[in-house]
Image (cartoon, rainbow, N blue to C red; front, side, top):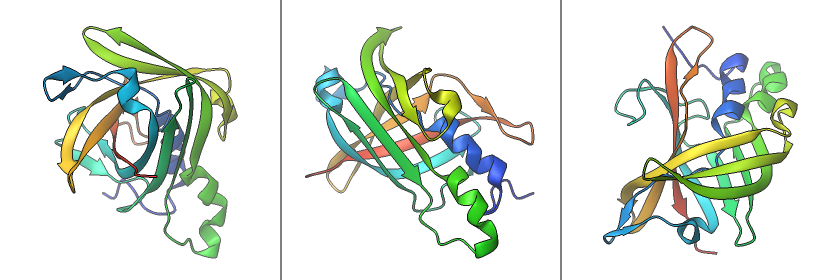
Length: 180
């Protein structure tokens, strides 16, 4: 059974749920803890996986394709903006679904700690999904593997979600800080 096909519009709609990307959980960095200062800057999306578990050991799909395109920026002033899309070229018949493969939102964020983990909660001001406007999106972040000499952050929602086929899972997004 194919869970993710390029024209699977309802599945791509879940990207909007997944990509309220503004949360942070604890990680160890040279023996220290992740702080709000560590996330400030612009980050490049390396991967977006739907998984059966939060630790991403059981991947069930790549809703934005094998090479997703995304950026998330956290400012010192407490503002964030995120954009994720599937860069593959769509067949003309798929064009109505393209917007469903795009997730974009922004708003003020606050860092907090819960159960020893940092979280970032974004109060959404603007979103491609109007249902998100005025909502609070919370995400956890942990230290990921080093890629090309750079530390990565792994961001996950604080709760699992259910796909259209009834399977419950997690969105796991891996980001690397950009040199601008």
